[in-house]
Amino acid sequence: MAWVTIPDSDLDPDSPITTSLMTALRDNVAAAMNRNTGAPAPATNFISATAMLTNLVVSNEKVANSTLQRGKLRQATAGNEITCISQTERNAVSSSSFTKLKEIKIGIAGTYRITFDFTGDGYTASARIYKNGAAFGTTRTNSGAYTNYSEDLPFAANDLVQLYVDGAIGYTGAAGKVKNFAVKESQSLQTMTIID
Image (cartoon, rainbow, N blue to C red; front, side, top):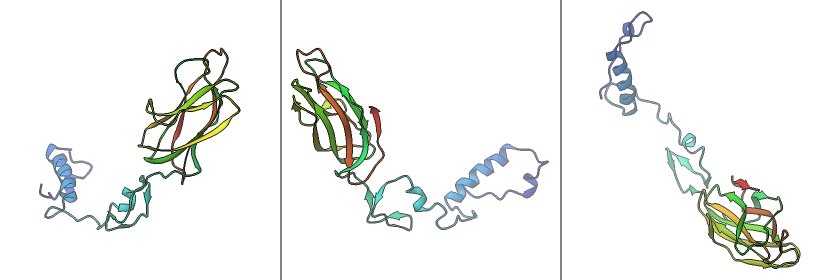
């Protein structure tokens, strides 16, 4: 599309809005963006690379001439910084299958340290980390006092990390208790608790 010079008389308050005027305005935006002949050139970096990268989490960010150099999208690395924690104590009743008691949504892909406190409260019960509804971590069995468990596991952005518990079979009370379900990494990232 070629740049069209629009006379001032077509833009004064008393002039009608015509199809040809609106077409010229629309086409001139495209002509300017495409730097067509006759179109005014936008400033060299009128949309800065920094502005485009504002919503990205970047390690070793190097921005020059609208290019991200020597950088990459940041991946989580397992560590001891709490990214998200669900502290509420939840319990599974007697059952013969695992029941979801906790769930946290992962914000950025990478490897996270998943920790939780678990007790069978005097009865043998099991707990296991799941990812998106599928068994993923090691099955933990406990019949004693609260014990802290930890595993470093990989997740993609928007994955759901879940804690499932199988309560003590034959016990009608609240055996199989969990609390302090946490997602940890080397730096704090955005995640959100779904079931606390």
